[in-house]
Length: 173
Ligand code: NI
Image (cartoon, rainbow, N blue to C red; front, side, top):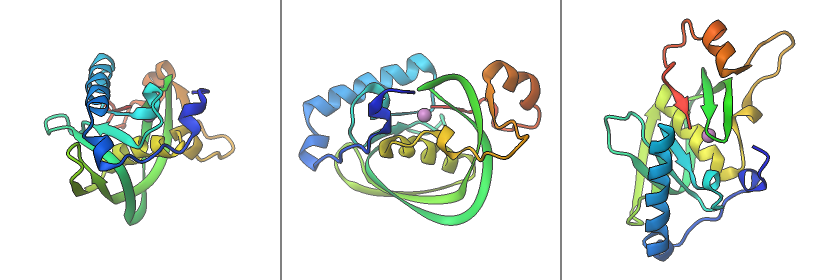
């Protein structure tokens, strides 16, 4: 956090760029980074590439989704809250409320149009990840209310907030 690339709207890729050897190399690199950090998602701006590409690997028993040029539509505006973490903001967790169901239209790694609908915790994961492509970090979405403790160091999160956080293994991307 603090690197300007994380605050820029990233550039969409043409189908030829998506299937290019450069992009294949980037995909490979990002998978390695994701594994190193044991994350569940990673967006290109997090590795200093300002392009509209993200990997989401959640649930982890399913194939990872490679998402280019996404458009998000909210299908259910009801808010749900989870404690989120981010590889670009180490050692912190923040409680963020987001719509509980969204649809994402995107191009896959073959530049083929696809659509996915997600709800519950995966909806939060996808929204967090795709926010990165628009220069938004989860800390921007924490509601500030007097007296609330919605941003916490990982250690204090484990001590004071972990109880009752069902998806505690959760959101490090
Ligand atoms: Ni993140």
